[in-house]
Image 1: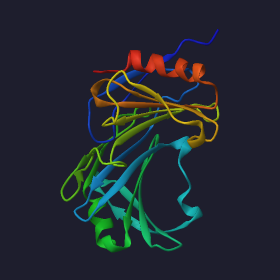
Image 2: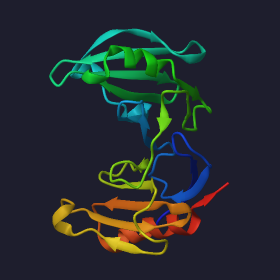
Image 3: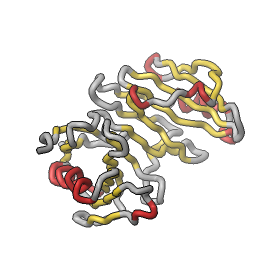
Image 4: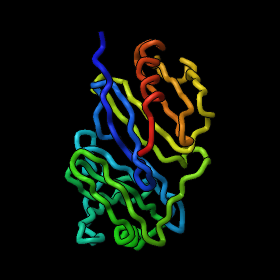
Amino acid sequence: MSPEPVDVAFSFLVSGPDYSLRLPVDFGALPDLEVPIANGIGSRTFVFVPSQREPTLGTENSFVQELEGTEGRTVELWESNESPLQWWLRWSLANGAIHTHVREYDTMQMAETTAASVTIADRGPTTAPVLLLSPPLAYSVSRAPGYGEVAIFYSTVRGRSVALQRPSFLAEGTIMEAPPSLVDENTVLIAGAADDIEVKVTSPDDKASALDILEPVLESLANS
């Protein structure tokens, strides 16, 4: 008999409210978070990554300098070693880091502007942060493909994840299975949930096992 699911909580990286849901015990309590943010030139993705999953920027990039962020925070600036040229900004947190990028045509000035336009509400070691934006940065989530805000919970079991995206492309109560030819032998179930949220379960196991993950999520997902 499988262990009972456990309750976890999250909010998206910029917008509320807080949500709760139930996940299997092998899933981490902190999700990866992604959100598109407009900077007046284009939209750039901001990502929160928990410490245990954070990529190493120094592998393909070179450290440039430290920038002054809001509330005395230091923001690391890195430059890509290969073209196309882009810069990476990194905010270090106790439970992970926030990353974003600035493209060559944004210019270096936009890196400094970005660092000075993001305030981080750090909500403790067991809770993901929330970003507060100042102009020219602005929330740019829309229904255009690739412009949703996302929270992804990962399991310690290889290949298992639960992603929650807003807005949803499916009506609440709809469940679809991705064609096996598109998902590298994984089972991928996608469902429309409440609050215009879409839930995607990825599992290397069969459909029944994926449903064992999906159904408690759909039944328990609620805002607070």
